[in-house]
Image (cartoon, rainbow, N blue to C red):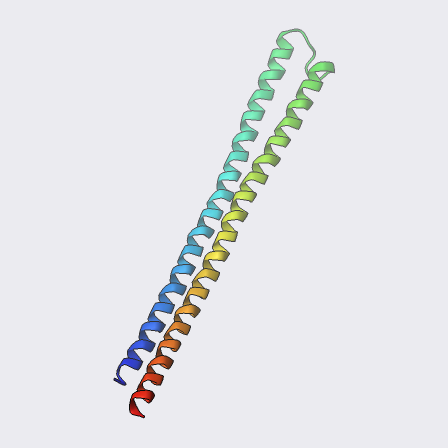
Length: 142
């Protein structure tokens, strides 16, 4: 009957270690996804800049072709509006990527905490089982 105690302890320790490792692995996955969100945000902003440059180039050419002086009057106002819109798009892209990444980082923290708490719970459960077993053995021996 005393051989059951080391088995209970070993089972609790192995279970706790597995739970903690699982939590940390899940956290690692969430952190990798957060990094990917950041990278996708950078790529999106690069694409926004390229599209904006192309669009403004077409604007200047069309304005010049229509007889307006490029970079003057309403042509300048149009270019300024395009620049403002581009900056707003860039800021929104950055905000969205940062928000998604922050959410994933929060999930990573929760996965770590969940793993640790699950491991502690398994260790406490193992300790309770050992205590109960010891009490039963003492009662049987009385």
